[in-house]
Every structure is written in C-alpha cells, then in structure tokens.
Length: 574
Image 1: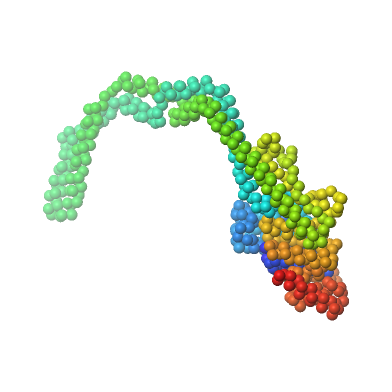
Image 2: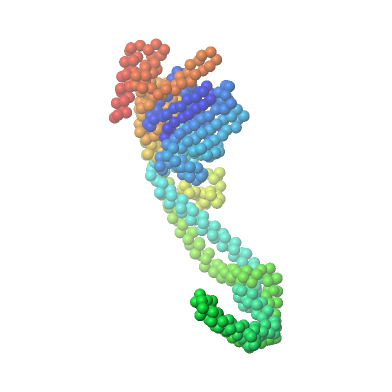
C-alpha cells in the first residue's frame, strides 16, 4: 500500500506531505483546488514523463517522494531483488526534476532509471481515469487476469512447460540434422585423421618422457664420470668424506667426556653417516648400470621427430591432438547412431505435440468457462453501479500473424499458432450503448465512464488481481444521486481487498471512505498556498455539508451530512 506522498515545488504545491491509510481514502475539495495535482505527482513518482513545466515558479527543482509498504510476496520485492536494490520493509521512491528537464531517480536511496521505475510502478499502483497507468488497458494482461480469475495458473504453467520442452526437442532435431550434414561432408577426412591418430599410439606426457630419456642417453659417459667421481669422494679415496666424518665423530666423543652438551653434535654425525654410505652405494650402482644405447637413442630421435611433424600438421599439442581424436571418434559414432537418435527425437516430439495440443485445448475450454463466469460477474457489478445498459464481453482470438513464430514466440502445431500461454489471445470488450458494436476498453471516450467500468471490473476480478493500490480520478463524472451512492458502495467493497484512493466531488461517494482528505488553496496577492488536511469526524461532517449545500452551509445540510456519514459507516461495518 501507499503509506505517504511527499511533494515539494510541484506546480502550485510548495510542500505537502500526505499519510494515506489502508482501505478507502477520499480526496475532496473545491473545483480547481488542485486535487488532480496529487495524482500527477504520484504519476511522476511512478515513472511518468517529466516536464520542467511542473516546477513551481521561482524554484529550481521539484521533488516527489512516495513511500510504499509492499506485502511479503509482492511482485515489487522480486523486481527490487532482481535489480540489485535493497529489499526492506518500506519501499521509498524519490524523483527530483530540475529546470533543465533532467531528473534524478532513487529507489531505496540507490540511483535508478525511468525504465526500472516504470516497471516497478506497474506493480504498485493502478490509476483509473484518462491515464496510461491503467494496467487493465494493456491487452496482454487480459489473458493473465482470466487465468487468475478461473484458477488456471497451474494449467497455463503446464502448457508453458510443454512448449519449452517442444521447442528444445525441435532445436535438438535441427541441430542433429545440421551436425549430420556437416559430419557426412567431413566423414572421409574424419576417418583418415582418426586412423592416423589411433595408429600414432599417443600418450599424454610422452614427449616429456622421451626428451628426458634422450638427454640421459646422450650424456651417458659424462654421467658415469660424475657418479664415479662422487663415489670416490664419498668413500673410495683416502681421506674420503666418510673417513673424515669418522674422525670428526671420534674427536667430538672425546670432547663430550668433558662437556656432555657436545653429545648432540656427535649424535647428528652418527645419524649422517648411514645416509652418506647409502648415497655412495647408489651412485656406484647407477654408474655400473649406465650404458650407452645408440639404437635406443635413434628410436627416441625418430619418435620425437614424428611427434613434431604430427604437431605441426594439426597445429596442436599432443594432448590437443588426443582430444581432437576423441572428438572425431564421437563424431563418427554420431554418424553411425544418427538414424537411431533422430527416430528417438521424432518420437519424443510427437508425444510432446499430442500432450501440448490436448493441454492447450483443455486450457482454452477452461478459459472460456472462466470468461463466461467473469462476464456474469461483470453484469452484476455494472448493474450495481447503475450501468445497466453497458455490456462486457471477453473476446477470444487465435494467435495472430503479428506473433511471428520464433525462439520465444509461438510454435506451429497442427496448423495453429500456440504460445507458452496457449492457443488464445484474450481481450476485454465493452458496449456502452445498445445497438453499438463492442469496443476495446481503451476506446471508451468518457474518462468517468471508463473509470466506472474499471471499478466494476476491479470488483469482479478482486480475487485475481495483485495490485495493492488503486486510484480513481474521474469515477464520479456525469453521475449523481443513487448512482453515485452505488459507486461509493462498490468503492468501499473494493477497499476490502485493495487500498483505494479516490478523488470525488460527490458527497454520496465521499461518505463511504475510511480516511478523508480535504484539498484547498488560498490565493493571497500573487502567491497560492496549497493545503491537504486529514479530516477528523467534525471537520469531515462540515466538508460533506459543504459538498451538499455549497457556499452557505445550513443546519439542514449539517443534519443531512450526519445522516449520510452514519449510513456510510453502517454499510462499511456491515
């Protein structure tokens, strides 16, 4: 719901802060007091096109701030999360308009864009009158609302899932055919390369192993000399490392008799001796086993040269050539399994097409039943607000040519276009006068008439619609008396499911509100003061009396006002 609207330097409003209540909120005041400016300010906060003409004379910028309290499962919270905005208990939208025409937008104190603000606004408020914010005027919403009204969302989701699966299978089939055509064109080359790579007997890391072995065999004599020299230094020569270590140990042992702390170094030498002896034996054994092998060296050189040629041919490393060979093996396997895989995909597509067509037809039948029920509800609602001559119809059409089949568009099935939403285009049509043709909602000329039809539609759809706040600006245009009272009662009924804000000149409507605001302006010289006040019971009685009696409020007008307010309160309680 809309908790608060703050306005500064907007049109004639220097500053105003309005705290709205839940349920039914009414705004009244003299003609020209500026009531519709509040709707204009709210529209600006919801992403309406900005104009420097809105800025107060003498001010450099205007600012509008709207504070909302979204429900825990509100669509607005999902949009905030997806957009990377903070998701908090309150949603604060602030828009500042400079005289240059530029505007700054903040959503929960984070900079935002007009595009995001428009998307967010459509989930928060719907404005009824001559305004673009009316979601019910957007045709794509009509099918969704019929589904919600009829409890068909699960059926629609099933159709959407079947469409998704069918699209995927058809893409897989197209890809399989394209791959087969390419694979057949390259088949001979693929077989030749696969045979060559298989015959090569490649192993990962083979090149490094061969290179290491080549270096060893190529320097065999030098390695033997070094090993024998190391053995002699360690063990064989007089005064070898091991001999000298033995003498060091003996001397340290003698010294340890005088200072036991030298036992530690002596012990370390005791521990080192076996390692040195083992090292001497290892290098002796290595030298004795080391032999030059010209034949093996030649084999290694030939193998390395072969691997080098293979790498140049494929312009790849050995590991990449092995991976390429695996790809070729799979490709050849796909060629051989093509008929089997294609038949399996065709069977799956056929099964999905049958299931999808049945699910879509079932959904259409259920939609038509729900649409019939909605038409019946609308007949009652229109009658309740005195629009007995107005007729409402839900029109069904096949998906049109303009919805071109494609990746995200409809699929063609049994000569029909079918989208994730099923077989149908749905549109709400209205006939305002007998004998006239049915027309789309947006072609209704009268703003007041359109607002009242929207009121009836909102009441009929209250279980289906998810928008939390509804604004009615021209709902009382051209009506009065019993018809106005009926409209007020239906607005009150609607406020049990939504927060309702309504601008009215009629006391018959105003008395049904739970929260009443009076809008006024005072002109002093060249200055205009704009004021919005929330009315307490006594002040509200006076405002209703003014609306009834005009400039001069008589005791009779006060009495009538009290009676009307009591009747409105009783109906609200009932």
